[in-house]
Image 1: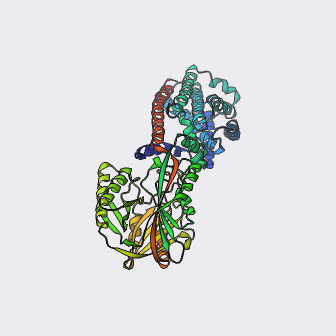
Image 2 (image 1 turned 45 degrees about the horizontal axis):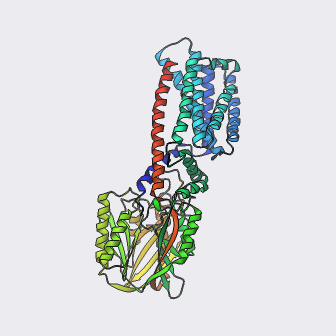
Image 3 (image 1 turned 180 degrees about the vertical axis):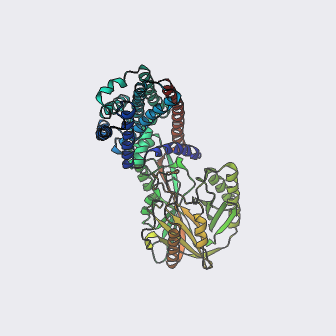
Length: 596
């Protein structure tokens, strides 16, 4: 049994969110680089070399020549970093953008602050000291980036980190002034201290996760390769090495029809994830295809500890489904029963001695339902007479991990629903199904919907239509579920619940959560219209039906909570080290400005 991994996952996501700080496109980085460098060249020639604003042709010359050289040196960086983990021209330009912003900021503050304090007659020499300090600050920053993000060896990161800053200075100021830049021992000392701090940080932060994590930067680079380059092979290799074998179950509810192929509700124990292009991140669509598109892949009670770490292990999981065994058959079912208590709701349907129970906390929302809820409800359901409990996490609103009080309230709500179901009257039923391929939708949906799209299951019980909606999405925008239920409930039919698959194939977005929940991009009206069309199509296709319950056991490696805890620990320690160094850097920077 695995404990809830959500705390570690939330912590990891919070740390990885820092990767969103870089500019969104290469073009934007290029523009920032050119603008920052141009401003740097102008300030240098106006206040360090004394060329002055009146010599516009000289300023223009150094700006143009400098930018040409800058572009060439950025390409040289890219060439020198060839063969490293993340040698991408876009990332080199991101580093370049930050580098020249840092250099410009250092020179700008150096020009401004001392002038407010004193009127030193030797300002040009002092200003050249700030130019040198900015140069070495940039060198230290580049060393840190090339070591941590690009995966260069420390020696290579130092050499490449020094080349461009020391070369570009020859292209944006007259050559006769360059020796003066390196004459201040105080500025040189402060600059070398900053470079040394960068090198020391790179060593200590990389080792922060030891002994469990050999290299924190290796994990960072594997994550970035998967997240930004859609190449999950490195992360899969690391995750699979640390994964543990575990038998996992999959329940399949098959609706057998008289005249056409049936359809299934699939409830895997494994969790979709960890994120785009890695392992089982697209698990719902893989299962959807395995059932020829005639299935809803629901979210069971599982968390990120039950992520499948690699495509190879995902294939093993699918092979295990072929050994599914039939548990029971049923020709009658109860009408849906819903019990609500505040934001907690439990909706259940009884198939003789089998109960299907759907939990929701919408519109307040929640993270994955804790495993303790499944354990206690399974025990309770058997106690009152059910043989099997199929517990579904609707995953239909954004929220936080449940605390103890919320968990207890959700449990009590579910138990009350089970109490009502155990005495519920059962009827013969008709079933119909429709997925997004059955209706014309145009180009209404965006990146908040996975490849499997939407689907509706329609059950006619005691001459009443009951609809179950499904979306292949990573959660839903808060409040959308309520709007769908309200719009799709009438005298003729009742929308019982909306569930999502929690697919992680839509992750990798530059948002606070790393993905868009359904309704954040696609228009709400389009989603409701699609569900309306699917509901009509599902009811029109309904036939007399029976239900068959199957179970399959797959032996597969899962990531486990310890692996996630190790990543979280490494990132926490690395972040603490980084904060210490940033504080030391701030003190050094202020002292440098005042003492130079």
